[in-house]
Image (cartoon, rainbow, N blue to C red; front, side, top):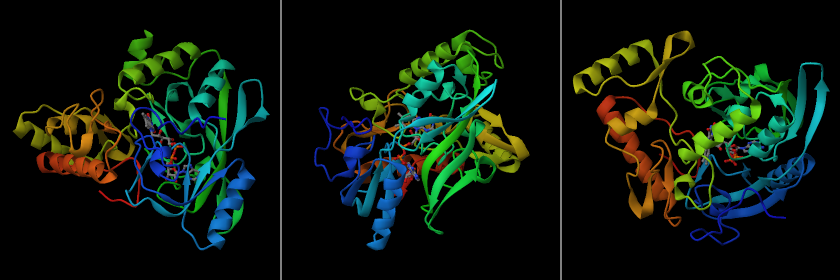
Length: 365
Ligand SMILES: Cc1cc2nc3c(=O)[nH]c(=O)nc-3n(C[C@H](O)[C@H](O)[C@H](O)COP(=O)(O)OP(=O)(O)OC[C@H]3O[C@@H](n4cnc5c(N)ncnc54)[C@H](O)[C@@H]3O)c2cc1C
């Protein structure tokens, strides 16, 4: 059976089976000490426990679309999550709650829910990776995030050596974050989503998507149209994986949008007024914070689309936030060097720190 996650064996791409670059969308990462494949939840727990018993560090890896793995690789055990399955665990007239195995490919799940007339995930169409990884950074796009529909996460708690069910309220969901991110304590086994039975999408919150659908922000649109439109918009930005398009050989957005408190935001506004750049696109949030466009900061700091670093790494020609291994043969060191240059350039010009969105493994910015 072809592995839906691994796709590196096109023109440029690593072929050594032990090389983690085979399992990451950036096509980067050195060798694994040991590589295991977990086909179901029990197998996943058993393989993690076995690695612990061998006193080995464990890296749980699924679609490899949100990791940057160093050129030295990972000396411990890498467990690839390949569990599958979707079960309806509760339903009433209006809603359906589905339990989805961690290894279920995310976009296949979204397609299945849209097809069945279950609303709630449609704006997250086209995002690569696995379902089990979506709670890790509270995956979001086009005005939707998984925290909107997750009811609970089933995980193996490595600290207490037991399987636990964590209600959404205890998952610490935030913008591109949760209790699971940067922690190796929990291994996600399955995720429960409560979806709404409806031929129409959830209210569209993202202006660009509303425009493309020909509706007002706050309106609903047919589910299938919403999915198709999101995928079209994403593809135009190189944000849908395409083995033939090196603009997509990335982790999606490399930097999160900075969230500034009011004082830092006013300082930035004063700085941009002095520089004559105009004001950065900003979205006010709760608790008097303001989210700023990282793409704008990067462009205004002189790093436009296509900006190239060493060894054929470059900013995508379609999206300023995506750093790509467009040669397919670069090293992680080269990608990190480009990321550092951008981060430092933005800080020098605007005084705003940028933070990476992917999880960095055996490498640092
Ligand atoms: C082209 C492109 C577009 C993207 N667009 C978006 C977007 O719009 N919005 C967005 O939020 N993200 C986006 N991403 C990032 C990425 O697709 C998501 O974060 C996705 O959920 C990662 O899933 P994965 O299975 O590939 O995770 P991996 O990269 O395999 O892992 C990511 C992290 O999660 C951990 N992890 C994975 N599975 C488990 C598990 N079962 N239990 C415990 N830990 C686990 C890993 O150890 C690692 O720390 C994009 C990426 C690409 C390449």
